[in-house]
Amino acid sequence: MSQDNELNTLKSRFRGYFPVVIDVETAGFNANTDALLEICAVTLQMDEDGWLKPATTLHFHITPFEGAIIHKEALEFNGIRDPFSPLRGAVSEETALKEIYKQIRKEQKAAGCSRAIMVAHNANFDHSFTMAASERAKLKRNPFHPFATFDTAALSGLAFGQTVLAKACATAGIPFDNKEAHSALYDTERTAELFCEIVNKWKKLGGWPVVAPQTDDVEITE
Image (tube, rainbow, N blue to C red; front, side, top):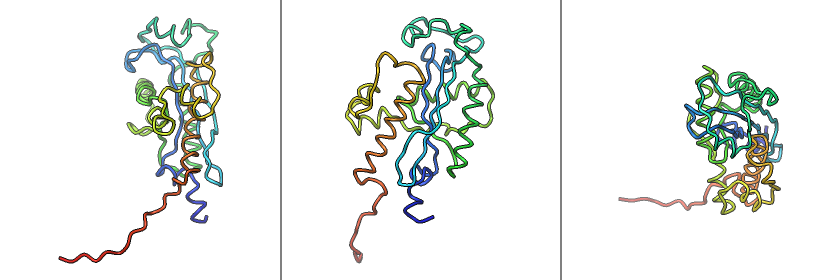
């Protein structure tokens, strides 16, 4: 592989990390006590010219774990009327995360990356719920970095002057339907598009590959 082609890989672009976009819908704000109700993951790929794009989407409705707290206000916000309804087709945290992690590890290995890193909008929230669910399910092969993330709220503030997902997408020229918002599937797909747009925009502006600054040799004498 030539040096240029090597630079146009996920492992080179993100220092060995495999970025995966995540969004969760929950029954509150406390990852340790409140129910995880929905999760979606979108893996990413880079073409031979170095442009980032979405790859695989995995989406699950989640059954609240035993003893989970469910706040009415949270359900009103995300539109999940009955977390226990069989019509949701919900699965356990363990089942959902095992499937997501299995696919991540498969694509991560194919990309030559050493570890996955979560991409999310206000990433600490999604990261904390995913990690807490992994611990409850006693999953030992969690592919995600334990604390590092790519936060598209912060990146959008830099790239587009917006931190709200809908406004950042609008500024980036990405269609966003507020009626569809707060669905993990919809929000993850829009966040993935937004992250790809930011990374690709930086490349278009000449920010990648990084060009080492030119410095004149200076003789240092004492």
